[in-house]
Image (cartoon, rainbow, N blue to C red; front, side):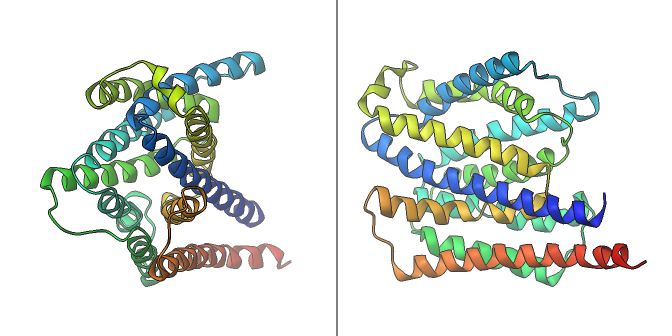
Length: 305
């Protein structure tokens, strides 16, 4: 790949990752609104998997697009699907045992873990700048969600950390399936998530009927629709930029969620939360600068006759 192509891929990948974080974050605000009306989040996740598979297959049929996964990427796609299911299973289960804010802080250790694992998985050097950027992003997330560290259930903590580990696998696996079409990823990841989603719904919601969605139809529609858009951006971004870059970009998600909750649900943000959001944005910007500088020597070499 030429340096110009590398730089273009970095910009497009970061744009897609940030778009995914944006839609995921806004989605959370409407999910909270739906939950306030008595709609189970687990039930929405279960039926969302069904809807995404049906819609993706229909689009593939109309566009005559292939849903085949190249043989050499089947293990990566399987890892992507299973890790996505583990993220959902562990994260949703953890918030039933510990405060959502605490679960979010534990879960968002995954960008730091990706940075620490990248020298072993992607053979990327563990530079002080990269470690500092990851820690700055994590500190910002802590300030944004503001955890209450009291009376923590050990199982809830373990489940939240399990979701973080699964997210690490998810990002590395996603980066290893660049040739698999996005529609194919959407279908097979959701198919692999399907059993987990319905088991969680059956255990936590007490029903598998979508009739309860009528209690908050707009909030449910926006929650599912925004997630679908975010998931597509997420899948595409992971094939364009390294896992460590994508992971840090998705630290923007809780910041967007906090801002969206303030706008949609009229929740108030403390000054420290705004400071945390600024720290996350600064970390993402620093990461883009670092990655861009890595491309600069190659661009200079190509421009030299």
